[in-house]
Amino acid sequence: MKSAFSVTCQCGEPITSQTSGTEPLKDTQCPSCKSPIWFVAPLGNEVGLRIMNRAWNELRQQDFTLTIVLSAMAVECELAYFYIKWKTWEFAWANDTHFHDPVKREEYAEEWRNFRYISRRFDEVSQLLTGKNFDSFLQNNGALLKAVENEYPTCKNFTSWKEFFRQELFDRRNKIVHRGEIDFQQAEGKMCFALATALFHIIKAMDTHRIKVMDSQLNPAFPSSKATP
Image (cartoon, rainbow, N blue to C red; front, side):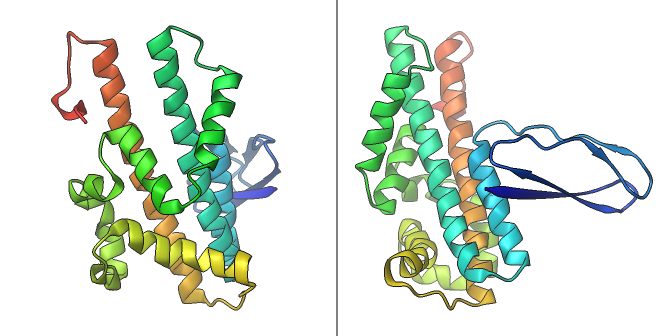
């Protein structure tokens, strides 16, 4: 898969660097002012970020159907990554074994595949990382949803954030891959990318919460009151 990452030099010149697969981005220089540009690999799930970046590029190029497919794919990749990461860590912590156990990772990957429905996956990740289901976590973290509420006020017609994201993002993806509907327009592509972006922020907040819990487990003399699930 090809990926294109855009940055803006301090002189204002836009710069785009392209790469394929897991090939790292190459350092370059600004064609205008000749300043060096260094690319640092992000922490966490780089594959999910690359898929999300590809979705953004497809949105810019006005391929809205592919934007929707890639946005949903990026979120599912992110959810799977953190589920397997934390299940593996919990097993390693409980059994004093190596974190990168390929057998356990494959076991948890199979477990993940068996959840099947996105609503179940939202809850499984949220429960694992925060001790609460998806909607309960968001009830206490409303700031994560402000951008969505402001841009798409119809979300208030839903009684569940889980169902809102399922219907507005993943049901659209399913119409494409399961029913062959491909004539989506800009508003739908833009909305799906925005919802995927919001979900990335939500999942990151869950991961941060779980890190605080881990810190309190590893350093019991310095417990964090905010880390209690």
